[in-house]
Image (tube, rainbow, N blue to C red):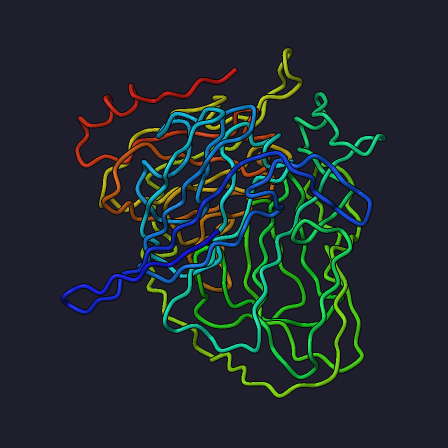
Length: 447
Ligand SMILES: [Cu+2]
């Protein structure tokens, strides 16, 4: 499924191609022993195969669509050309029976993921997602590494996928009661006492917020959505809204210890939350450790002052709708088109949430730094592609559009909110006059 070709160039720079065949097709997804659903899968598995590459590699993904409806793949978090972003404004959805080749260089190390960007409330719920890991030269040394993709599945009383029903799901987003790690509800992990592992978490669920806990044990966050942090952040919990990722250094744990990977109650202002178990970890006999997590992981230079004046305001809002119960809005409009952005012009965006529930704001294709949350600078600096914005609050982010012109987008990563209009397309342009043509070429339609 994954092959590697190494080309040695005359200047002795190694350039690798990571070639992956992905077939989107229906297949049995076994959530737990005997609990099977008809998943929509990449290569017959949920999650899809983990794609692994090194910084600078060219990733080539040959997608064949064997589903009965069109699909595309979005490369969540990757700073790649607009034409490869997988949204319906940059490509025609891949028709049933058709194929499409995605080809891009991966410029940054980190924990990324890929997922359908067509009819996502159905296609992602049914399993069309996977992890994409990019490694750099200066990674912390750990004893083992795991990718843990968290998801929840909503089943009906017959044990099949519950159909998307009405205004409550549209309002709150779909939360399922079958919680899975890497597609399985009965996950047990065995770790060796005395060792430290790197766990890369991806929240692939449609609407569920995960307030990640290792049964109260402390761990160190070492990476966010845009790669390593500057320094490990010791904590006992980390909030992962839909679309978010976190890399943690887990361990060392004591021999004989058993604990759950769980989600603690978190109030996103959309119904009551409980403590939920995702998986169980059992700590076995001690093994020697070679792990070394440096106190300094890397340097992230600030790209703007903490009190920089916003150049744009993005308002996440909602409005009662006779037709839908609720419409979700950007700057007062459902399915918004925002103003163009000039290549090289520093963007300072105030993202304000005037609605009454949390929304995870996701920017495609570019990393941002959070300058402040309700006027207060964050506890540490990081590169991100997703940030949670609680109700009646605002977050100021800074990002620099590098020279990758084209149509881009941002949206709430609660899939039902995105579908109900909390999204915007915008052009990144080299010259102001380029915007009109780009926006005219937008092929999307919304119903
Ligand atoms: Cu939302």
